[in-house]
Length: 249
Image (cartoon, rainbow, N blue to C red):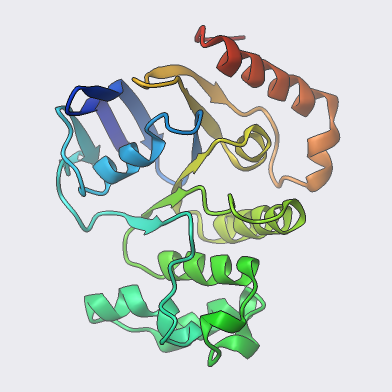
């Protein structure tokens, strides 16, 4: 059964068309990336899925339920970690659970320990590195009750080495929990390394240029980045985005 269905979604802001006839089907437990140029409407699509906005036309279904314009169905991780500076690491992690009235302190502590943050549960965000803050933010999202995780360029502000470490860590956590993930990025390497499938968006008004089933086996290792097949796929996607022609083989 399809987990998330995005049907003919279009969205404009006044006279500016942002999304045009977007269609996606996401299966339960998939890791799917949405790749496109900066400003192509990727974050707008997340706002629509999360119910913060209502599309001009189209429908969004989660497990066959129409959730168009409805909030509370997804877990969202923004580009910045967005931690509350007056709350400890543990208090930040359990925030989503707290709002639902169902705290599981022990589970939160266990996940912090697995993330290498066990010694920081009583610390405040100002003492954490960028990568550590992103781990806290992701654990907070993972501990929420919603099964759909929407990650909006969560590693974009990190340096290359930290970013790679975070990508490997994210895959290890995802492979353990198998939550359904939608991941926004404009980084081709990142999309190929992380994803089962990739939807590639055009410039505005964004439509889907093509959908790619990533051919690499799991688990993914960092040496994949240097393999000829990986570099070949990177070139194909790069030229597709440059030329905006749509579809490729």
